[in-house]
Structure formats: structure tokens, C-alpha cells
Length: 492
Image 1: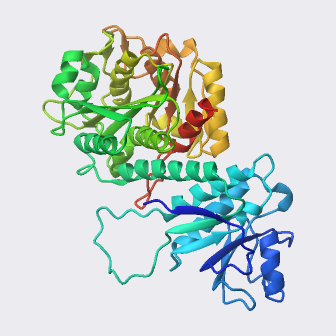
Image 2 (image 1 turned 180 degrees about the vertical axis):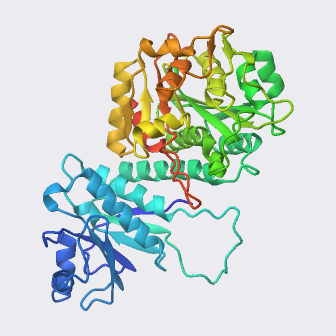
Image 3 (image 1 turned 90 degrees about the vertical axis):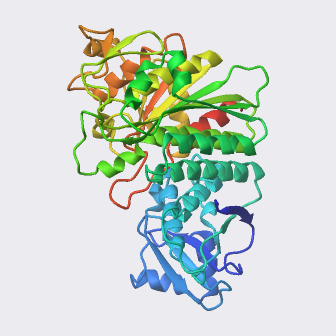
């Protein structure tokens, strides 16, 4: 369950919340809420800052107990950095640190006055939503495959109130985005022996059954064979876990053409015959995060009851080495009729997406957006902070970049020029599935562009942003905030 979000106008020094959250700047400046607590406690905060027992460094926090004159038992002081440089990124950093600190506290509720801070260029609704999503990001706990803990455990955060006049719309957007992000994160974090293509299809079907106005269709191997999805089915040949094509529809926009979301759902990517190296292969359970992100975006849109039509197509397969696996040098025939020479079976994401992109055109969408953990090359180019955006549509690029900047779920545009297309030339098929040594993220985008001719289409490579690396790394839920904001903006 996501956190319960609410708002409060209580003064920080008289709040009866188990924990109140206020901010301080490195120049010694206190936020209004911190100043009230400092005054009521006879200068306790300033004394601690002056003695360097606590710091106002951006991203830091300190917990104070039982301050005299303060009703709340706990005061969480969050460092805001230099006031002159305080901006949207700094606000988000402070909100994330507050969420991180709250996760370790034995409190069921908290109240934050960070939303009273002035953030240049951003209104109170943005502050509320950003702070709420940051809190929920850290409040999330993965427990699906862990031994249940003692029921007598300390309380965990369930609700948080933010200072400000009540804004029902911003609260609804925060709750819907948080639900979509959690939906995506949970799917991404599940192990591949649970989160199979069949499991993804089941989760989508259960969501559709529970929501009025949502329909779900699941195509299995035989139906995809009849449609000629030879590229997608080629990838799936080596696994005992049979593929699924999941189709969710939301009809909130009357007769308007739908927006289409297409997600890569490789529930485990061994690389196939072109086997991946062993180190960090366990992270390849996250190779379905494109699908998870699109499903999470769909969940958020439905929760918000957005007045538009939406179709979400998820190609779910497992890429495994087997006696029946597809091979380097195989030639696959896609649903579009175009043939593809396989140079590497680890370039499988584009092979399942191309058939999904062709299939979604039956709904005559006004826009198609796909998301995929597609290339390591994108991680090399952009690191872990920005998703790669590729499109030939200038207006669509601007809309998506703006949505990413607004939510801080940012993307960076990479070129999709014809100059790169020749890298896909083949002597044995219409083109290959691999573009060569250089520009791998771009040539992967070029490959997908050959299946979207005549449509407004954009590709998001989220290989660097979909999960945090390491043995304790979790799925992030990106690009749910970016794409949900994009859809919200289409309804404005």
C-alpha cells in the first residue's frame, strides 16, 4: 500500500505528529517552520548548528528528541544547502532525505513543513506532489519473498501530512503516481521464477477486472503465430516460460484516438546463445522494467480517471539458451513482413518490441511511446540520471522532455538521423538486429523506427534509470512519473 497523503495548517511547534520535518540552510537561515521550533525551544536548533553538532549540508538530516516547548516527540532537521542555490533539484534532494530518514523511525505518521519552502518556478501543487512521491519512494519495502517478521515489530510509516492549503488535485496526482510507481517497482523487484510472462499477464488481468472502464486481452503463442510475430516468438523459443502479449485498454476519451504505450518485458535476459557474462547477471530480472513502467503509467492514468483513451501493449518473454533457441545468423520474419538477420541474441529487446509496435497500430493511435531497458550503450552515454529519448517528432520530443523536467524523471534527447541507419545493413535480410561498435543506443532506436513509419512515435531507453545497481539495488519505477505527467498535460 502507498502512503496516505494529507495536508495540514498546524504550526510546526504545536503539531502533535510523532515526527515533524523542517529545513535549515547552510548560511544559518532557518525555514519559517524551523524558526518557530527554534524560538519555542529557546534556540535549540541554532545552538546545535553553531556547535556543528548538526549540519545544514544539502542531503543531510539529524533527529532531535523531546525538545523543550515542542509538542512533537521528534523533530527531523533536513539540510537544504545554500539558500541562494536552492532550486527544484535541491528541494527534491531534501524531500528524498526526509523520506530516507523516516523509513528507519518507529513512527506510523509524520508531518512535513518542507512544502512551505519557496522553490523558484514551482507552485505549491508541484511541491506537494514532489515531496509526497519522495516520501513514498523510501517508504516502499520489498517483502514478497522475505520471511514474515514478528508482528510485534515497531510501527512503520503509513501516512504523512504536508504543510499547505488543501489541494485535492495535487493530492490525487501524488497518490496515483505513487501507486503506479509502486506497481512498476514491485513487478521489477520480483525474482524471475515468480515474475514470468504468465505472471505479468495475470497482474494486468487482475487490475482490469478490478477497474471499471479497463479491458485486458492476453495473446498466447498460438495467437501470435497466426499474426506472424516471428521476431518476438524467435526470442521466446529457448524458454519453457511461454510468451504473452498483454493488451490493456482504458476508454476515458470517447471517440478520440488513443495514446499507445509499448513496453519491453524480458522477464529474464540470459543473453540467449550469445550468453551474457556471469557477473551481475542476476540484475537481468530487471530487463522487464520497460513493461513494468508502462503498466505502472497505465495504473496511474486509470487512478486519475484521465479523460483520454489509452492502450498499453506489453511484450513479455524470457530469453534463455536452449536446444530450441534462436541463433546468431538466423533470419526472423517480423509481423510487419520485414526480415531481420540476428547477429547477436542478446540484442533481443528490439526484436520483441518491433512486433509489439506493429501490433499496436491496429488501434490507430495518435501517439506511440515505447520504453525499454534496451542498451548498455545508453548507460555509457547518459549514466544513471537520464533516460535516452529518441524521436523524429520535434513537438513530441519537447512534450516528453518538459514532462521529465517537471517531474525530475528526466530524459535527454539523442539523435535519430538517417546517417546511422546504414549500420543496420545486411546481405541476408532486410536489416540486422545489431548496429555495430558505435552509437549502440541510437542504432537500436533506428531499428525500432523502421516499424513506426507514419506514426508519431518516441522511444525511451531506460537501461540506466530503471533500477539501482548492486545486490541490494531496487527497481526505481521510472519512467512512470515522466509518462504520467505527459498524459496529464494532454488533458490540460
